[in-house]
Structures are given as C-alpha cells and as structure tokens.
Amino acid sequence: MLTMFLLLLASAQVSMTVPAGEEPVEPYVIQDSNAGATPYKTDRWFKAFHGQPGIDRIVESFMDRNIADPVIGEIFKNQDDVRIRRTLKEQICYLLGGGCAYTGRDMKGAHQNMGVQTADFNALVENLQWAMREEGIAFAAQNKLLAKLAPMKRDVVER
Amino acid sequence: MAKTARLTLFAPLLAIIFPSLPAFAQGDYRSGGKLLLTGGVTSVEGASGGGLATWSTIAGDETERGIGASASATWIETRDFGMTAFGGKIGLFDRVELSYARQRFDTNAAGAALGLGAGFAFGQDVFGAKLRLFGDAVYDQDRFLPQVSIAVQHKHANRGAVIGAIGGRDDSGTDYVLSATKIILDKSLVLGGAARLTKANQFGLLGFGGDRQGAATVQFEGSAGVLVSHKLLVGAEYRSKPDNLSFAQEDDAYDLFAAYALHRHLTVTAAYVDLGDIATVKAQRGFFLSMQAGF
Image (tube, rainbow over all chains, first blue to last red):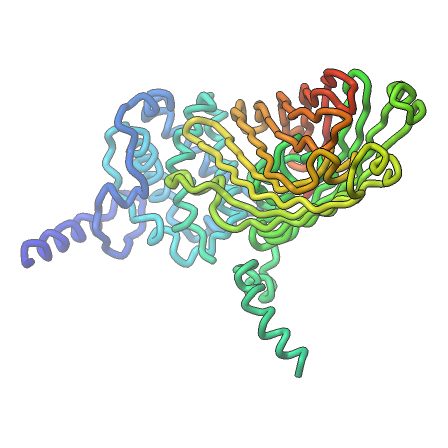
C-alpha cells in the first residue's frame, strides 16, 4: 500500500518537471493509458503517417488551423499551445504503434471546463482530416487514426 | 389542471427524446456541426438513408444542440418507366426526423399497353417520422453496437380506382421500419440493415395489400458502402418487397450507388438501379439520380 502511494507520488513528481516553453500543470499520474485508446500492435500505420516527421507536420498544421478557425479558435485561446502540440505528437505516435510514451493527461482531464460541444469536436475532426490530406496520408490510414480518436468524444464533449 | 397533468406526463418524455433540451432552453442553440455525409442522403420515401434502403441517420447538418433540414429531388429512369420524388426533411437535435415526399411514377408509353393510357401516372404522398433510439454510428468505434432508429411512414396513393381494379386492398398504408447503421472506420466501411413491416405494393404506388397477400409482411433492406474519400461513399443496396398482387409478380430491388458531397450543403447520389419486373413489364433497370441540399 505504501509502495503504491510512493510510486504514485514519484510519477506525480515526474509530471511536475515543466518542459521548456510550457506552463506548469497540476500534478497527475503519467501513464500510457491516458492516451485514451490502445495502440495498434504493428508500426504499419505509424509508417503510413511518414513516421514521426510526418506526425509532427500534421500536428503543426492541424493546430495552426484550429487556432485560426472561426468556430473553434476561441477554445484554444488561453491554452498551453506548446504543451498541446507536444502531447498530441506523442499521442498520435503512441496510438499508431510508433512506440512513443504518452505523457499527457487523460482525455477527460485534458478537456475539463473547455466547454467543447459536438459541433466543436466535429470541426476538430475535419481540421485533422484536412491536415492529414495536406501530408498526403492515404484515406484508409487516416481512418485508422480516426477510429482510435472517435470514441474519445465521450470524454471530450461536455453536455 | 388538465393542462398541468399533461405537461407532467410530457416533460419526462421530452427529456428522454431530447436530453440536450435544457441546454437549448438556456440559449445554447447551435446550427450546423455534423460531420460531412453523416446525415445521410435521401431514400425514395424522402427519409434520410441511401437510395432504396433506410439508414438510421437523422437528416440535416445539426448536432444535439440544433435543428437542420434538407430538400431533395430524385429521378429514376428505367427502360419503360420514369419516377420522380421531391421532398423535404427536418432533423431535430440529431434525434428526431420529420419528412415528406411526393412521388410520381410515370408509365410513359407502357401505360397504353397496360390499358391505362399512354403517360398515365401514379402518385403518392409519404409522411415520415424517425426516432434515433440509441447508439452512435460514427463515434462508437470501440463498440459493436450500431446506431438504431425506429421510423413510421404513412403513405397515401392517388389512384384508388386503378389500385382496386388490379386487386389492391387499400390506397393508404403505414410502414414501420427498424434500422441499424454502423460506420466501421478502421475498415472505411458503412453497413446498414433495416426490417420493414409493410403492405405496400411497389413502394405503395400500387396500393397496400392485395388479392394474393392482404396482411403486412416483414421485408429486409441492406446496404454496404466503402468510404473512398471524406466526400465519397460508394456501395450497393438491396431491398426486398412484398408480393401481394396476383396479376404481376413483384421483384426485389437492387442498386449500386455513389454518394458525393459536392459541398457541405449539397450532395449528389448517382446509382444504377434494378427494380425487376413492374406490373408485368419486364426487367426495369436504369439510373437513379438524386440531389440533396441542406443545412
């Protein structure tokens, strides 16, 4: 029991070291399951996304588009943009079987009090589809990622 | 007093059908926001669906916080016959759909051979209501459960005298449809199935019930499509139909379709359709074209 507690405390401490350019966050337990879905068992889809450089480009253009979006741009104001980009890159790499560790919060915690509605979630999906097309990702591979992300709507959207 | 009693009964029902209604009442109304193509296209009966088959989708571009609508025009041209359907549908909070379609079935030159007179046309009004019961075709990618809806379609045909003469029992009837639709994203597939309790002869244009079979029967509708791009769905549909009239065997219908979103507000569906023999006139195959505009 005490070991459990110390372990939890230890992992909580890890999250408190703030990466460069990011703002400090409330401590939380770092674990891959925070990514909200289980990863693919092969790296086939990670490769279909042109590996980490491809994922990085997708996340950059996706986030730029979200921030400029007339409908959902507002949600990204006052958010830690540097942190979102870093954790998104980790999350996509992890889900696509790229072997990354995911160090972000779970989906419910990360989106708490953001007031995301279904229409916002869908606008986000369409921006991601746009970014994946820009990177030239095959449509079937795009859907492999979307299949992992779609059920997260339950934790992201607040009724 | 009676009014209050009715309200108390009605309020929980409303809360079940529209769980987001409190948000709406607080002024959180929001139009648009559905993912492209997930409101479906238009079936011949005017409900959201494929061309021939019913889908469990709710029409319009709205989410659970808004109201959407679309209008549609459909043309079917087979070797001997022509059919048009014009309609409109309203989607309420991605939960309830109300639809109307006016169908016209033109016998062209074959009308003379059938003894009706060349250019004789059958018409029908279809009033539909659909309720999404549970499941989400799009987001529930981690569950087997499809999106399931129940629908009622009341149809009224305009050629009662002819319907009676060919052995039809009624010029109006009501279909009940239970439908299930699922997008399997990681395979880029869209699958749908529906069971329809119906007496309709040739969708109802030739009346309801007949001298061979008077009672309603359960018919099956199936559809399978592949998402080719975020704008394009290509697939096939099958629809079984009752065989109620002794003067002519009624066949099942098939189509091969492509539904393409030209724009968020404009979708076109083109299909090759096989309606089989219609009223003794053999092998009615041809094309199907449908336009849908909505918000």
